[in-house]
Each structure stands twice: as C-alpha cells, then as structure tokens.
Length: 281
Image 1 (spheres, rainbow, N blue to C red):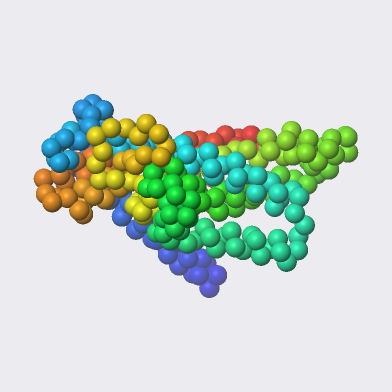
Image 2: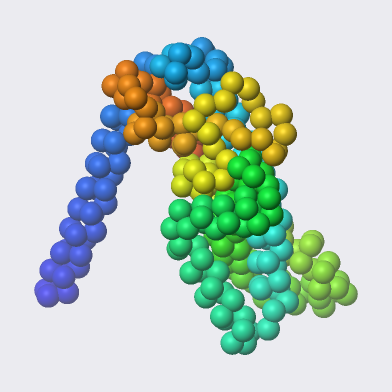
C-alpha cells in the first residue's frame, strides 16, 4: 500500500511538472506566433530592411544566419567527429582520457558569452580576423565542438563490441572496421547530435555580438572577412536597442517567428533521424 501511494505521488509530481513546462512553452510559442505570423510576407522574407529597420524585411539576417551556420558546420563537425572517434576507438582508458572527457563535458556547460569573449580575444584580435563572418563562425564552432564530441562518442560507444570483433575477425583493419562498420551504425545518433548542436548555434546571440554581427548592412557579405547580419542579433537589437521599440515590435515578433521555425525545422530533422534509427534497431 505504501509502495502504491509513493508510486502515485511520484507520477503526480512527474506528470504535473511536464504539464506545467508544456503549458509555459505552448503559451510562449502562441504569443510569438500569434503576433509574428501576420507580419510575415514575401517582402518580409526577401527584402532588405528600410527606414531605420522600421520597414522592409530580414533577408540579409536570414542569409547571414545560413552562412554562419555553414562555416560553423565546416569547423565543428569534422573536428568533433574525429575527436569522438579517437576517444572511443583509439584512446586507452586511463586518467588522462578521463580528464579530457571531463574537460570536454565542462566546456559544454560554459555560458555562450564566455565563448564570445574568447572568440574576440583569439580570432578577432590575436589572429587579426577582425569582426567578421569567419570569426563568428569559428567562435560558434568552438561552442558546438564539446556537444558534438560528447554525443558522437556516446553514439560510437553504443555500437556493440561484438560487431567490431566480428569485423576484425574477418580480416578488416581497425580503420576499415571503423569506416565500414562502426561509423554507419552510429551515424544516425551522430547526425542527431550534430543537428541539435547546430540549431543551438544558429540561435545564439552572445558569441556573435563581439565577433562580427552588425546592426544593419545594406548588402550581403561577399567574403567571409566581412561583417554580417544575423537573425538572433537582429531580434536582440529590435527588442532592446532600437530607438522606436514600439514601432518595430511587430517586426521583432516576425523575426522571432522565422528564427523559431528555422530551429524547429532542424530539430524535426533530428527527431526524424532518431525515429528512423529506432525503426532500424
């Protein structure tokens, strides 16, 4: 009887917490979408800002966000997966490896603004990249690396040891075993972690605040060494720094809606990959 009561209390607490969190989330999304969707039009998506950002669209911010995510992907994904393969398949289980893993997990929890200051000191000042698309992409790449390494290593470690042993017993080298057997089995989990990490990077404001994003630019960045506009920074400026906040508030809600949709699309892709993986298993 006591066990039943304790189990019921736990269920009530669990489902109650989930319900409260979901209600808050749905309420926030409803507020943003109900005010943002009326603003969205083809002009809003495909035009440049006009009249001090009080009219026009957000096309340079969308393009800047896509380019920024592309550079982040080029830096973070290859290095992250390579580090995960080394830690999972080659590194010995000793105090040094455990220390490296602990450091990577701690890096994943550092506030993003710290990465912004680090990117300012390293890429903008020390490496003299200036405030640019490249410096911001590298900074977001560093921010994404710990999460990609951790999720990729976990996916690789979930591949059964018997699979590796069977491959090696058939005469494959360790490199061939990893390339042809382990990586394909772990790929859905790796891709899920990569996409979730990149979706987080696409919505970050603090790291690009110091390293390259600007309030307004009347052209798209033709080179990676130029400054750029980005959706999260554009939203931040419209919401807090604009001299006519009430006038541009509808545009801020429209920008927030576009950013949420972009992040949702990336998350839906990740969930679809996870769903396919479960079906495969």
